[in-house]
Image (cartoon, rainbow, N blue to C red; front, side, top):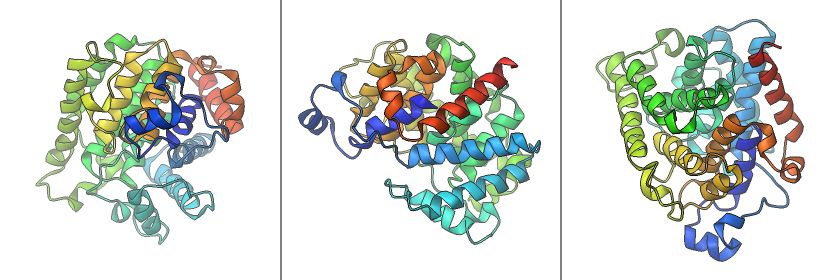
Length: 329
């Protein structure tokens, strides 16, 4: 939770700039400093929305799709109405939340054609559950579906949460991409109607299976590209060159992973590399920070950075609660 917020804040001022411009304004990428105000963007704001909905679901002992969807709706609408919702929010989230506010069924509010990264950049809390089971996978896809209904957004959200979970449970970074590819192949033809309802019928696909396979196949394609370059990529070259600019879900996942995998034991270097990219820098760095934090823990981050990050207390409290639950405490 700290890692994703720090990455988000670091990438906030480099988003929408190319690498030469970033270097000209802020100096060498390996020396990028956390902005003085340490403010986060909509990426962390919406991550907190998902985290609060998940916490409420756990506290009330209700873990079903309908209740989780209701809690997510409440949190997303609160975010939409908040005066703090001025951090360059994505058009898809704004459009969907405006419709969610009207009370219509969430599947009717979902932007079925959007696979922007706005869904998987906020899904990390689902990866911090003690077990990554049908609930976690279904909830990861459902939180995407409320705004981003494209099947690739659903699959990328599931994979992002799975990556966080695997790293938090001690899977070695070198084997992570292989594990994710295996997970994608295993789930490629599985449309979970319990969590997604009849969402697929809003698309032009002939069946639910065709709908969901389309999303997993796009994610598999970018994971294969990542697998081919993760050991040979030049860390001095913009990672977007290898796996895409990160504006869409599967590319954000792959490029965030690549930045982490280039420096698996150097979290700050990974964050700085992610922030110094030509693409969706705050979302890429947000994901990189989530992966690095899951792998190395909260102590990986400099105290001086942690003390300044916006929403520090809530981020720490949420992370500590899930750490305790995951360890059986």
